Length: 593
Image (cartoon, rainbow, N blue to C red):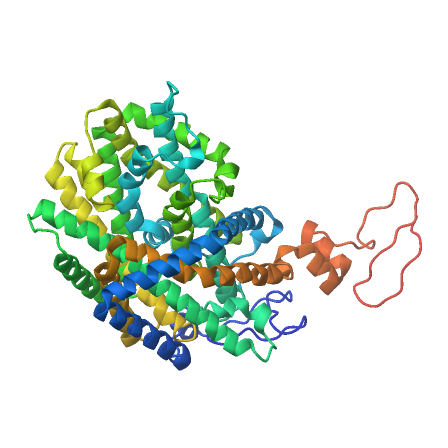
């Protein structure tokens, strides 16, 4: 299913108004045109600039790893010291805007030209692909590690009193609350805004699937518009490459640890690079099958395996504690949302904020062009309300449940002394999940399953990212050329390898935050462009549009299905004057007794 390569024909309202918006049914297109995938030529300035800069970073990081790490650390410190507040405020803006759009009249607008068009993907595949692309590897990596990290090092914003008799319980709840905060509504609001703007531009306005196409309301007609548009696409390319590479690096670390546990292979940098090379080859091969086959089926497999894992931990772990902890921590998260969302570290805890909240917000922003483009691509035919509610609430609820089961089990075992995970966490966050499974039955089977799950998430995420990068560098093509997809897939794997070699986990984090700084400005401008178009969309206010275009009489007929015509009406029992509205330009009649 693809979008037409040509923009909508100008209607009576002016350029950009579709035939359906003007009141008439859209013209039928030949079936072969409707089903043909839009494979467009490569955008040479975007591709070559993005490729050369990225390859230069790869070469520099591989040849001078120490200098690369020192430079990225210095840049990171500057970004955190001067712009940490910007990440916090921007995250709140995206959440408020997403909720407002879903609750307003704009929620009725469909991400399609034809109001009768049905969603391209069913609900389960849609949620599966969205979830896998959004944060699959991250949940596997941090699902146990983050709650334990907050338990051993209490977040300063919680302001807990160690002398309180309730301190251990408050510490467990606070660890889950902050995990929910980092993986709940805020990150998915960022994805929702980016995906909505791209989906609206692509499927409603019939533009390309490029990030710059969503800025048409701000760039069209400006002399500097084309150059600015390409600059936006380049920023999206860099954010996607480095943001995705960071996540794939996390996955490679965890797979390497899993191999050491399951197969007895000693963990090393060499092994991590081998893992990246093998998985990169797998997702490049998967990318050839496209969205409807490889990505769709791998994503569904991910959901099934992940569901099996959490169900096992739920029943093998402290089931009653999990049932109590989940609603309790969700309530604490929602009741503290405003306070949590406004902490910047100005009055203490700046280092902790940089390592956690600001890193996460930068990570989600760097993933916004990738995840936004991907979920826009799979959301054709859904209303804006369906889109925002689905993107915002379903993955957020699933994330809280994931942390309650895996993280809650680890917190309960650590708290009552039945297990000690501190030594494993000290080795690295990638060891935390396997340490939890080691304290549960069927360790060998479940650790192998977890390693396979991480590997498939790696393939799915990189598969989706390479398709998105191909689209960004080929004028928004929904089906980019295969060699282009292969190139970007290999490039992502190379960047992940270089970041691991130069700085390990910290190198991955540094690159993510640095590249997200310019893109946060792009995302804020994207909000302005989106609202500018939504406010003028006639589908947001059908009555007003029809009253203006076709007259009051047709508006009433549209709403109540009755024709106002005194010739067929019953006799007026009150003897008052009545008026009829002629179909043509006839004169008004008098009274009727």
